[in-house]
Length: 300
Image (cartoon, rainbow, N blue to C red; front, top):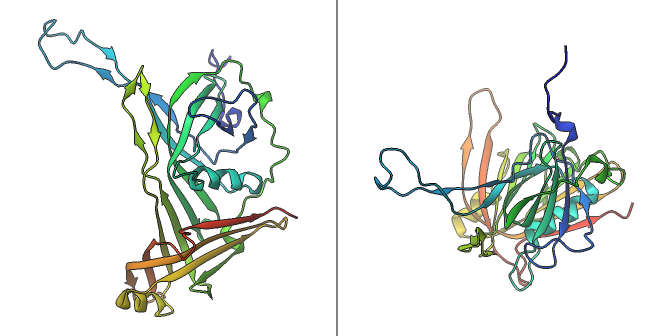
């Protein structure tokens, strides 16, 4: 019995590569590509084309007027912090030049419909670390200028030989709150919101994407084993957070939020279980203007 006709395929035949653009919505003539493994079914950036349909009786009872109005390209992207591309991934969400975010060209290979996304910018990034899953996920919310067909893109354009098969993991994390090591953290979510604003319709695509004020926050679930957070809530004080992720091959990633303003939290103390606390904090800036910073050491 033969299989179905057409370009049917498995998920292993889908691939992604990313390069930074020099001008928004234009792939460089000589792009410097970085191949980025997608985590699970984690690439959902895709074009939509909402149509104009007038709310009138013109044309009778059949809906006969459909006008292509604007191509909108949005979606989510999930990957893991593979050491060799972690710098690129964090740069996408955090790098600012005169307040502006960088933009990227992303080639997505699927045998059925290889495509290119232009002018990709990061609206949100969630860094989610969990002791239950033992991993660290990078979850992006993306917006782009346009999507176009990319018929020449094939599986042979992707080479993973320079990427470690092991990402940074939560199991090898050393965490500090206010400079003091903590070991009872079960999960934390570091969220970066860039507040993208899109321009009007320009020839069937958005005219621009502009980054607004950046908001950085931290949510944490941990064993309830101290009063530092509650004391800061009562007094309006601040605390610092640092997460150092170590890699089996000797690499190191450090994420730091030097000034966090505790907003509140909840405590769970069910009979027969250890007491836990869920904490919510918003990042401010230190004396040098830093709200979030990272260092990546691939020297090994």
